[in-house]
Image (cartoon, rainbow, N blue to C red; front, side):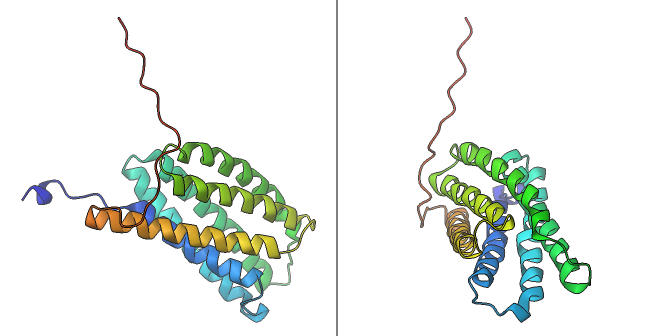
Length: 200
């Protein structure tokens, strides 16, 4: 009866991270040559739906739950995937070919955004913080690739790492929310809020 009056809040972060996992793993495999170039449009569609739309919807729901950190991260990363994938789909389906250097500034901005998220997620758990360390490195490598400083191999490897870590966290948080027990460890918070000094 109490559960009906006070329904349990769903773990929205798990949904967003699952979308990130599918998008990042698909893109990483494509960058490493595991998906043929003729399937480029299909790769972008998968990345757009899971990496973009799923994360945005999860982020909006998290914001409605008054989770500012998770809501901000999911929506902002979702808009990144949506924007980049849409631009590449337009380029792939028309004669108007976009230069890859176009995507350098947005990757650089998200590199700094992700670096801030490394610090903020250190207050949550070790796995989420480590995920954002890898995401930060991925944006930096992608930025260098867009400037033709490196190839697609390292960004591809790091996208697979992002997808794997996101999937792990999604499964771990989902099973914990469902069973009430941490079946897969996420690790402790690396930083802790200091209590406000008492006023006398």
